[in-house]
Length: 102
Image 1 (spheres, rainbow, N blue to C red):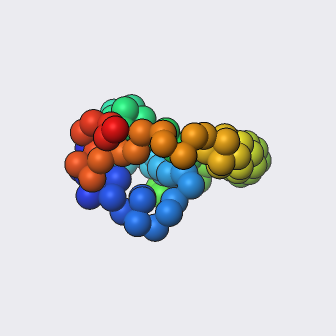
Image 2: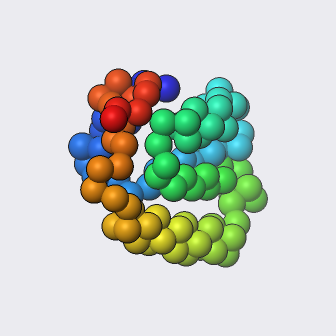
Image 3: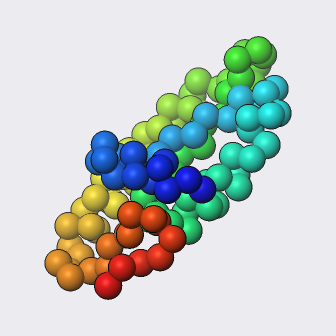
């Protein structure tokens, strides 16, 4: 995972990350689960994976998408609250995103 991606998340003060999985675009969605798993190794920010399609609308479920988004917002809110309770001297992520700094 590019540390540039992680740096942008920090720079823009993102509270979470949303991935869109286009089911019929295999070249893009094939590696997304790996990207998410790698991201989770370097960040504790919440992640949402939305499934959909740009070719076949039958692969999109509007109701399920809204439920996922609502749940994700709750997760992000809880994550932010938990961060407010952490110690001031807690470890921080290094610029390289490869290890924790003391």
